[in-house]
Length: 294
Ligand code: GLY
Image 1 (cartoon, rainbow, N blue to C red):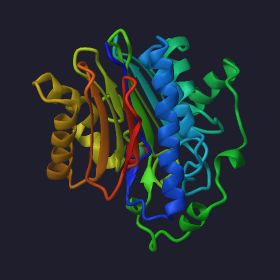
Image 2: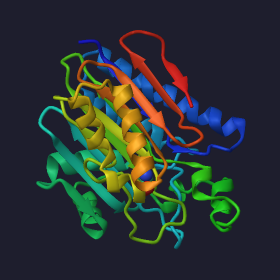
Image 3: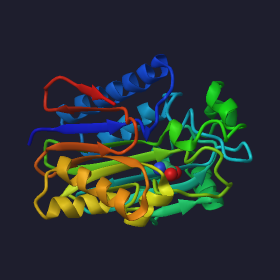
Image 4: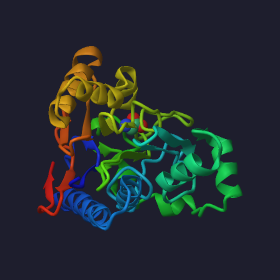
């Protein structure tokens, strides 16, 4: 099977400086290259999407891990989901604080917690029990204009920036995986959880159809269970690209919401779609050149 990986840096307005957009695109390209190399060396799709998302979580201009939006109380509460298309196993966390790589904690939930999804205090306790690396909130907050913007919500609508990161991949053995990580929406209420950690909304992976990661306005995305919907469209015969476009149409027509999607189907075809102004993304199929766009 030819390997493929596609990543996104969050759908939104991206009406930011060229420099910041350039940083986002560079992080997408770096994540794609690292994931592709792992896949070409026989690594699993699951490992590739986790690795790619950790690189995106480290990028300070993206809303995940370092660079996450603070909530209305100034805390950083993050959500993440990882899913293995081989057996539909999944791990998710929500409202987790003081971790640099929420996606890796979600992966540990999947393998070591005996559950699928941990939140808040329970997620914290689990992280401590497995000695998962913690960090001060200051390490997650980035000293740039986003922190200033949050104090004046009226001036910059939420959709003016981007949110969430994600990756989906297919490995040499035809296995699919998906991963999504986010700091959520800017200035959200404490305890608010969006679509990202919800299975079928923020991501879905099923070897029978496709692997998908979503981004955008979580309150709308979760109502159409958008990632599973893409898989279902692929199941009816659509390509990854057409399935993403169809699901974005459903999002728009049923909820009026905005967002973006990336997908790879079981035939190794990549796809993406968004109805925001931009969504930094990058992909690689086999050893072909890495493609970036927004
Ligand atoms: N899509 C990320 C969120 O709404 O939290």
